[in-house]
Image 1 (spheres, rainbow, N blue to C red):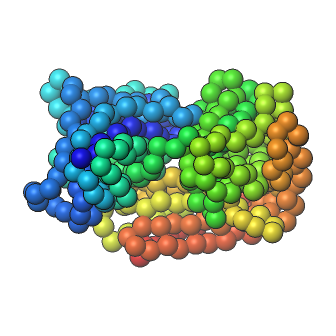
Image 2 (tube, rainbow, N blue to C red):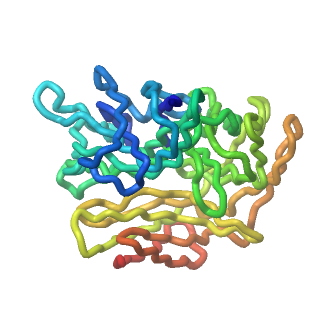
Length: 360
């Protein structure tokens, strides 16, 4: 036999002071298509069930779920089983919207069988397979119109527990609950976090590769560092506190509209991407559309994004405005097996680019 060790981490949530989930157990199976009742499931109980604020799991912080001896083999399906809301645990799974009271988080009707995620876990004899469940709270919590309810539409990934990542600092004047630092590849966020009160951020774990570091903050110009290298088992230092990233304020425009689907509740993600001159496109916002109305709305900066090529610290990053990208965005809606996009004209401060999408 071998052993599987599991922990949990999170990407930043948008507009919430807390997102709590109570984990009762984790299940794994060697078949990606195995149903709940099929033989072959291996269970890791969490006893007592652990109530975890996902927003505390940023900047490399992990919550240890435990270890499970397993027969040798490849495990391709993982299910995260949450405790139910009810009785003395009516807020086992809950959300605190910023400035509001805590409310129960409505979980999927099939949650008893577990929240499903694809996995690629190789368990070898007498060895430890070390993996992390990345629970993306921002994409997973869906507001349900004006009902006061919030729905859990889980977005989970199972990734190897790696040391490799990127460490850096933003200026404390930029620190905000809605400030985000992300590692991106080809217009996809691989890992994101919120800087701590001192401006420090740690994007970990991530696979080796070349990334863009993207800094977004409310009412401020977007900053991008290109070609940031990440090497196996190494943390790349982007900068030090003395050269913390600071970005100027910017007027904003609004990207808004609604997504409609044939089924209800609406399950759709809406992203705002900004194509840089010379590539790539970077993600500046990415959230779920409203589960009842399909509405989405983003305030995005209209000033030209500031772009710097990576240099090895302590050399200073040199930023320059990517003028051709100023005020231009691509809005992308995805869901129901379909992806649709709309490109904005150059937007000025106070402008609105309204686009509705029908999926599929």
